[in-house]
Image 1 (cartoon, chains in turn purple, blue):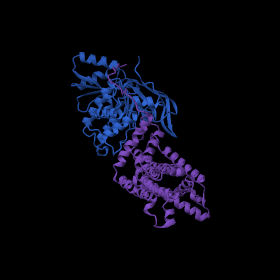
Image 2 (image 1 turned 120 degrees about the vertical axis):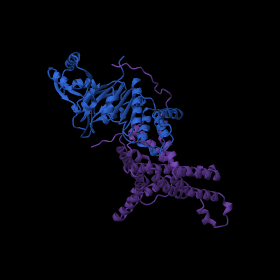
Image 3 (image 1 turned 90 degrees about the vertical axis):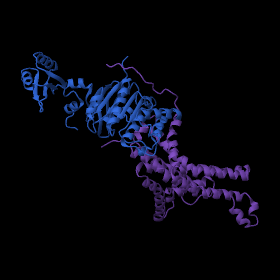
Image 4 (image 1 turned 180 degrees about the vertical axis):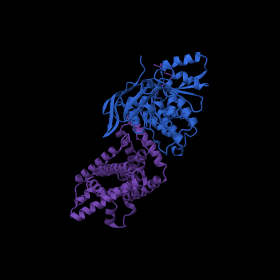
Length: 287
Length: 310
């Protein structure tokens, strides 16, 4: 038996926390995404609508600017209410989806194509940690076009209208932030699932957009063929809109209730997560 | 105190109906251990079991006393490089290795320091800040190696680490494996280049169809193969006379004169008997220039134990 002299020093320094390790991958991914021109362009374009909304808030809170212009009609139009936030959210949700279609495919597809999963899983990182770290990349990116501008608009409105306005309209904050959180979570899971199943980025990106358009078309077809209105529940945009309206205490639209829509959306998310988890195996089995 | 080992105790792994490995029992001591076997024989499965990437359906694996079920501890002592070009193309070599270290739990400054050291070890410092996508195949192989050894693991598991390396880098890499192993660490690797495996391995594991065919030091494995007589290459000038004398020996099974007439290929089942016969011939005044074992190598073991699998 050979006798070996231990002549090396293993790393015995401090270790960062589990959460810190999970954030390592998002950090490098954000760096890469922010280096892509298309991401910057979409981010820039997606800020146009929030800027217009900010201008609207400014005008709505400065009655002296439009007094005597249109009477009561204009006054009703220039009010910061649930309808205003709903319109803002609908527009930003579209940008969030486009951004997910751009950023999502580059997250998991290359790791699967390069068989890089063993590389990550031979670190103190579980499959759930991997999914979470990839999800954080998307949640962070999508927050830039949803939650961040929403927060700025809200702060601006509270700053201009005062704390009394907030006390009477806090439900909008709940609706906007909770509603956006649900939407970006759903969009992120869809983007990740598409990325896991399609190796080509462009096709995976198209699939993300296709997922929403196909379901929207399918919902309309179901409603038309069966003369029902519950088909809306499988249209993510419509279903989410119904949820947002209910969260902001607005009059619900016809069709399935917010709870029914939420159940369908949650089920969709769970199925996609399961499909994603199934695909992420640490080793490839050659049959 | 006995050296820490990698232990497989009656381990089986099936992928559905597909056999990975079957009832494997192994004790792998520190040093360079080469896994040799045809494609699909179970080499990568063994490596994945050590790395904890898959769990055995039966039996237990322990890596220097640590169970692969405990990744927090295992990953600190284990470095793994797969056979695939897994490094993200858009990342620089330095970022790739540093990211791997940060995933181990190192701070950014420690990770960068160790990443530079690892890249230096594989002679990749000049290309450290270039994107992996611009690397040659050999450079990608080296950056993969760097990420595996950057945290100074006790156990280095490398799947086909010499593929794609040019002869010079290959020699340097093998030298670094030797240096690693001489420090009391485990270097477990798979390779198809049997001639090389011969040169640098302390022990070999021959595997076929998920079963271990042989394991241990090459010579002791060869000694165990009784059905094939040992072959020796005898260098001498007077080949005809030496051959005639050897034919008269009971312990010599077969003698062939080499085509170029420079010596003989002698087959025997009794090494000691052959040695005393040769001593007798030498003492009688016939010049014998050298005797070398012709089949104490992985190539021959592979041929005897696994056969036409290659």
